Amino acid sequence: MTPGAIAVTRGCGTRKQGGIYFETGLSPYGQTLEYFIADPPILVDNWNLSAVGVQLIERQGVTHIVDWVGSKHYPNVADYLEEVRRFGLSRRLAKTLDFSRLTKQTRILLVHARAWVENFTEYRAWTCPKDLAHHLPDVLRQEPEADKRMCAGVWWQDIEGGISQTGDPLQVKREMPSFSYSGRCRPEGVKPQYRPAIFASFPCSRLVVVKGQGFEESYQRASRAQVEITEVDQ
Image 1 (cartoon, helix red, strand yellow):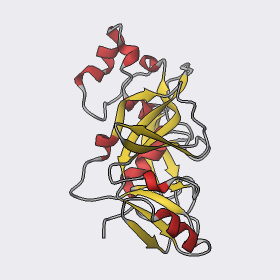
Image 2 (cartoon, rainbow, N blue to C red; image 1 turned 135 degrees about the vertical axis):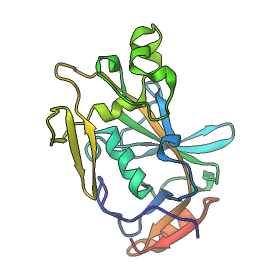
Image 3 (cartoon, rainbow, N blue to C red; image 1 turned 90 degrees about the vertical axis):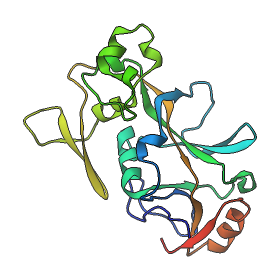
């Protein structure tokens, strides 16, 4: 059986009976989280996306899922990425989705309203998650094309809801339902200019259907996909 995501209480709560979930599991032999990050983020201003639910798109004959991660449960982009780092990815899919279009090549493209920070060069220092030399803070501040190369490392410098626990007022600890992580809040006086963008892309390890009310119908629908289907207790 393919390793799946870990069932814990997430920023959006717990999994529902009869729910169908897209999973990217954890493996000691797999890629690190940073491999899946979009750096720079991909703007979606003209994609006509809804902030609720998912949308299917086709690229080079492969259908992918575009999923908008809500700011209500994950106000910070780093909230979601740090959750995936620890527990793998688990995203609920609507039963009305055309599962017959999903294959082993399908990926889930995650969008967040705060993924692109237009004035990111106003932040102080950040570390590029992909170790890209041209994403170093000093380089991006000096080059005229910097606005096209926002570094994803800024997400960990833009934490809201964190608790200061050190002598550095910007260093914070962010508490999530099942874990905590460290980051920095934005510098005083900086007013971020956000635009929605894709911040990460993950492959499908498997689809899972949670046992309980509505299970049989959900399993039947999910089975139309050309990927592994697993039934789980939670």
